[in-house]
Amino acid sequence: MTTHEPGRDPRAPKPSWIERRREKIRAEVERNRRGDYTVPTWVLAVALVVIVGAWLALIFLA
Image 1 (cartoon, rainbow, N blue to C red):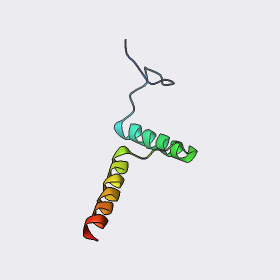
Image 2 (image 1 turned 45 degrees about the vertical axis):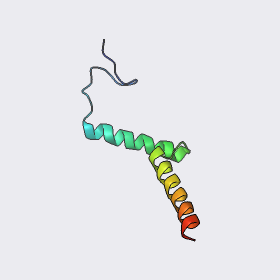
Image 3 (image 1 turned 120 degrees about the horizontal axis):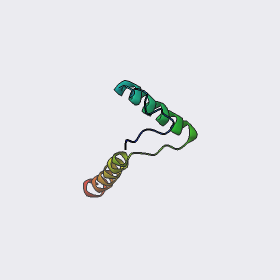
Image 4 (image 1 turned 90 degrees about the horizontal axis):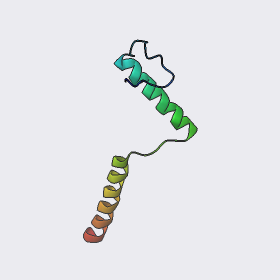
């Protein structure tokens, strides 16, 4: 039993890598326009490290 994407004919040729990438980007842009975007975890982690580092620098260097 093979699985396929909903709404796509399983007999149709598989889309190329670039077509899948474009569709993924298009879907992300649509989500962002609707307001369904999220901030990646690594961005939040970097922001936390910068804030804590600045706070510690202010305490120890002032």
